[in-house]
Length: 63
Image (cartoon, rainbow, N blue to C red; front, side):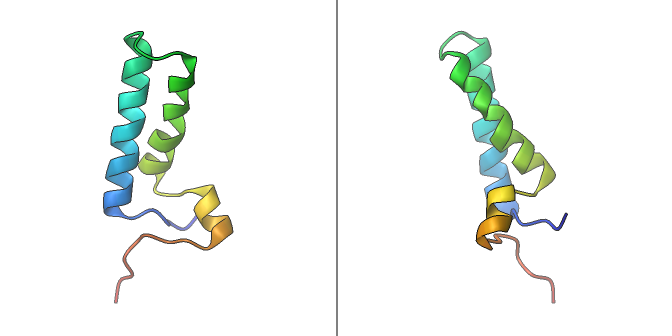
């Protein structure tokens, strides 16, 4: 699994995931908030399956 999610993209995914899960636990949004697990996981792992399928890579290349 090659990393295809870059720095800022990872941070945004993790924050959005945590906010969605937090709002669900606080009872502010319904069960749909558990979808926040997806951006949290892809941000934590640094790999996004749809990015791989579409050929998208937000990681900076090392030279």
